[in-house]
Amino acid sequence: MKSDLFAGEHLAGAPGAPGMTLQNAKAVKYTVDGEMHARQGSMIAFRGDLRFERKGQGIGGMLKRAVTGEGLPLMAVRGRGEAWFAHEAQNCFLVEIEPGDALTVNGRNVLCFDATLQYEIRTVKGAGMTGGGLFNSVFSGHGKIALVCEGTPIVIPVSPQAPVFVDTDAVVGWSERLQTSLHRSQSLGSMIRGGSGEAVQLKLEGEGFVVVRPSELTPQKNSSG
Picture (tube, rainbow, N blue to C red):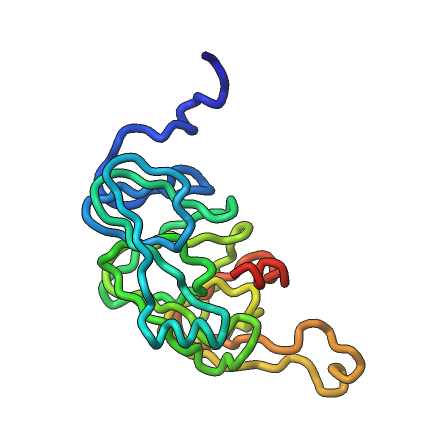
């Protein structure tokens, strides 16, 4: 049988070293030898001896998810084999976190990550009950994490001389050491007259970076979890 479908860039290939790689722009391949973690429902194919088990967030994590609608529903993948992960054909990106690093990520943008990484759900200081949610997931330790983004993300440097203001519906993540606060860019008079649609942003200050996507969260996607 002949087809462009069978071109090399589409083939899964032979098993490689344990860990994650980009299968293509929309999917991540993970060679499992032990355990890894992924968002629930993101596995699209696997081969080998693998088990998929729901992973709890603990009482605190479940409470935060119930209050805000945000969270990181996870599954543990254990055994030996290969698994492929994707989410709504969104673009995939790999980030290697090194000792001393910490990355704050919106739970909706997490695809999968190494079990060597530590994560916890923390309050986003200054964010209040804004559209981006009150809680984000903070990853630290040593290992890789795969993120998904609707569209091509923009990475904006943040410096003490140049704080950055981001729409809470567009933010993907940022350096954990940055300070956050709520910024109101619209006057009360403007709000009374109907507003500009850009009333409140998350202000990030310090030294680091912030990642945003080129679209705001739609009500339909927000309600789908």
